[in-house]
Length: 260
Image (cartoon, rainbow, N blue to C red; front, side, top):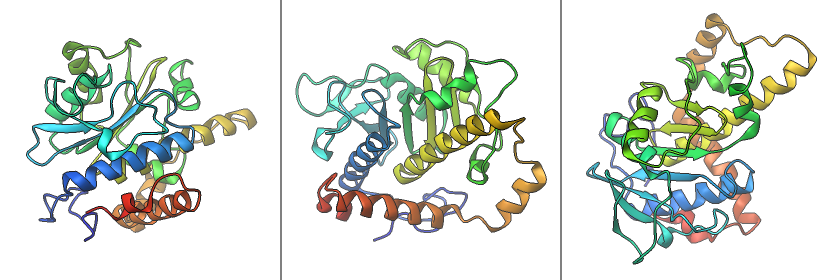
């Protein structure tokens, strides 16, 4: 079963495609978390979540579990108030679980969220008159913009979560000033790939700025790329590439990648 085949506007539900099972989502979150950790994007802090069928609960990793060791069975089921409704007794969700809760509440199109703390990306919140714009072609995902949330505090309650969701608005990524990034997508795989491209885009702009004045992609250039870009195909291609490489390195069991 390929529950990530071509969709309508990147939304599996609109296309009438069966949504991934909880078993599949657990495996994909664990895979994405370990991959992002191995790529130094999500290290000792950060988390990936996925909305469960029914849109009332979501999966997320425990607060104390190492991102390098997260397994499908470790994941907690939380409700939209950040309360654990299924999982090992006494295990807490991430302290910033509320950013997931409130974004899911505000954005029915979002099915997966990644939050991480990448310095090369966040540096664009620390300087004046230097915004993180689409510099590489796959940054077309953020053509509408990457807003910056002014409050660098941890998102430790519902009120802060609602404020973050308001800053995100209808965009697909945002930065929290002097803190980190939030990426939203229609699937876990999409959130993983988008996280890679967000960091790649920032790193390319950072290096280019060392040479001279950086030139973001123009509307005409973005239109040209959009004409031939197939997001679903791209996600499948990159997911396969990174998963196969990780399997060769023994990053996680092959059985995880076979879950349906």
